[in-house]
Image (cartoon, rainbow, N blue to C red; front, side):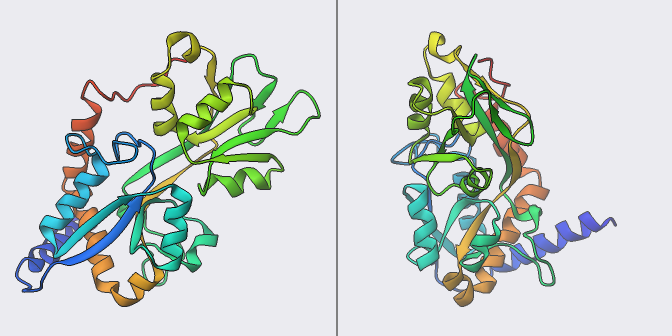
Length: 280
């Protein structure tokens, strides 16, 4: 039996054992950002009931297989990060790994390891740079350069993991809460470019009128790509380490069983969201 098969059946056994534990439901309060996040979370201020998204369906599967009951909120992302840091939230999604967050965010890091195990992630995502066609700006794959010596102003989502990355490159930042704001700032030429998550910015640009959509250019390669997780506050993890790992292990089981791929396919094959390279 291969290592992956042994791991799969081991996780299956652990999950089945959860059904016979006579424990009352444990409420876990988590939050995600306010922006529409296809195909992971649909809806801005409120999560869509008819079409909640991949991550919400994963959380519902976790509820069926554990004693957890999720209370899911939507907040501006910077507030999600702050509330996880202070323990006002038990956890949040979707968190990428940052060394600076390790002091207050509990990631699925196995004993003896220093980084989270990607097997427990929900997805791999990319940040890309978007600019207006013809703008005197270029992403080389290593740096953002401008024809003139003027400072480069980059729009980003407040509290996003990319902010420090861009700031360390010496660029000025304009931080906002909504992806739609970023796109409008770009169209109005109030920023030189924006850097955002592909799946979220692509959806905003596809919603534009054709004339506006054709003025936007997505630079390649991606600025950065990395796994994204459901992560917990240090306080929650300290009080409930076994529960946190049960949740992460069920996510791994959902992935290994093929259920995660099925959920993704159901959303990406629908007419409302199609995974294609944007034709800007």
